[in-house]
Length: 104
Image (cartoon, rainbow, N blue to C red; front, top):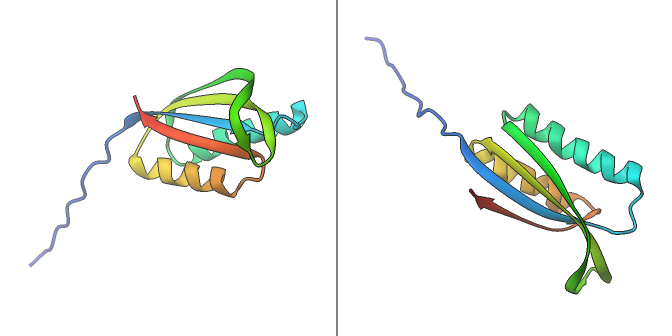
């Protein structure tokens, strides 16, 4: 008797992650952070990746003794496990002040 296991196909959902980087970073460090996140998404099966730099803005309140932050948005399609992987990387990064992910 042969046992067949069925796997649920993973749905690709569109997500938007907004994150804030430290304002003291140089252009090279900012580019490296962006490329690291983009590579992480690609390596884990994300599609249609769009990265937007919304610029440096004043924060509503201090975050890690910072008044300003550089805002970015990443829009991508992927499985729900991808969000956990990306947020874990952002949580461990010393250059990321805050992040939030939404389903689009």
